[in-house]
Length: 272
Image 1 (cartoon, rainbow, N blue to C red):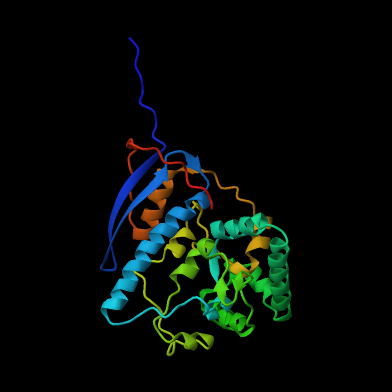
Image 2: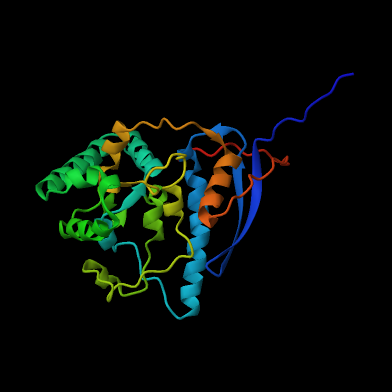
């Protein structure tokens, strides 16, 4: 007697229904069943972040408030942007994959930004953000903002890598007058409140140690950090990454979704 095992499907789809801080969130999330490194989860987590952000924007609209962020308004692109380690590695790839002479232009901008950080006495601190106490993050951020260093990807006050921008950039939205962002204070800038921050959850993923928790890298130093820190974390199957993400998001242990055949196979998402 012989037996035949059904082939393992390329992907599975999980229907997620959550109540985050009183906000209902629902999304269908498709992940590959094979193992892959954490950075390949970025397109999936960006999509889920968009779902959370859309719900928050709808809530603001119901209160008569409108997001004032627009193309051409790049004040927030001079802030200290904390991005996750997988995103820092992705930024490094984005720069390396640019055609010449564009690649050299962007590299020069990162190098010039580093010189300005050195002059301001900020490089050593920002090179080791894990040593920065929580109560010093805001003062360092204000000092950084005072240098008025534009993001190297800023073009005509707009993001030139919009589809690849970090999740923290996507989550930063305001309903206050956009001109107030040039000199932000808690009284003059009103941010859109999110039920959950995907960027924060992503910053804790892939680490089974008793480390500091949220691990971040300043966007302005991302390429050099990525070059010095190759990704040595073991790959995991998509359902396991999904389980970890939602377990960390909800603070509760979540079972990985069972593999179920799909009528149409979907290729594994790339990092583009």
